[in-house]
Image (cartoon, one colour):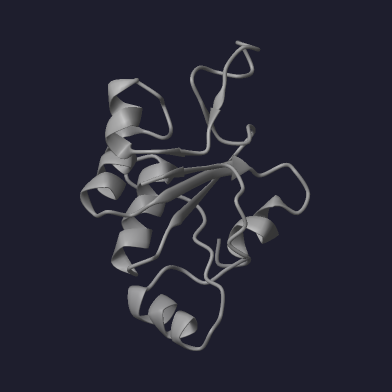
Length: 131
């Protein structure tokens, strides 16, 4: 990874943010049993991020898998508790619970649609907000 980006050091990441730079976390923690979702949640909580942006193949969270069920409907907003009670698999449960316990919202959006990331960053209503 060092050929592509510097290793994660919290103090250094915070300094980049203070200077107005964009910080993108890639890869996992390097620990077994922890997904990249968990790594992202941990890092976001550490730096006191406003939100986690979860790019996926679909444009948000649905009542069921839209790739398998054409009648699935998309949620524009949904609570953490509702996701759990409806067994909607937004991300792994460890990562999801970390976000819920730390009141860290998640925006789930289609990462393959050109312009979506920019629209999310600009605060436009893209995907599904979990809060």
